[in-house]
Length: 289
Image 1 (cartoon, rainbow, N blue to C red):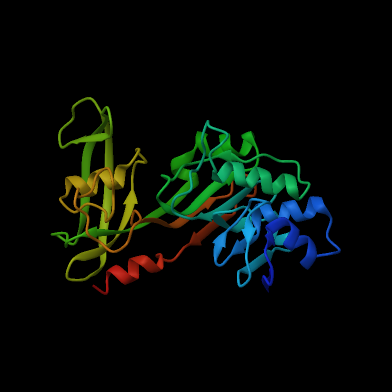
Image 2: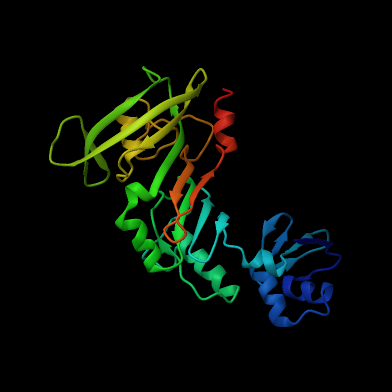
């Protein structure tokens, strides 16, 4: 990545200024740079007629070809001919029917296209938009189907970390309830009400005055399962807009749930594979409070 800074010495417009500073760059390339890579006084600027005055500082951040090919919002931690494991950021959808949404699947497909590779990403399992961490993606329908047909024995380890309010008592245990889809969220019942049974194992890893860092393992993978069970236990996940406290005064403004461990048997090679992602820095900050 190359970063260049220029100070404006006369009134002009942004595109004209870029043309003067980068005289060997074509107009088409200048417009591409303007669309993605320019800041004026620390603020993103994309309009070609953006007015400049003396003293303004124009910053241009240009990525090399390899950086431009990388998918945004995630780190690819493993890739072979059949599948990928990515570590996704909070705020990124796994997939969406709306082509305007930025998603893991869309970014991986665009990255493959930019590299001239002929494969398409397929969902194997999902993480909520605001849950960060490890996600498994197949490069073909056949590989995705192989996981789907034998998920429980193929994926032998999935663990999550969450920061929850308060201290669980007992600090470790198992919680089972029956989950049903409500109008706006998932509802939990301690007795069988015809919903789907969901079992969560939890273990407290660390505590502070206000918060606990807890590891969760799932026997079942129901929608919002950890978040719903934390609410039912009386210790909701920090900054959970749906199942958390209405007045969440924590200084961290993201859902504090992270997919931290993923272990599976490769459906093609038969090799056992294991990956880990550390707790986000925001989690550590909360535990210092």
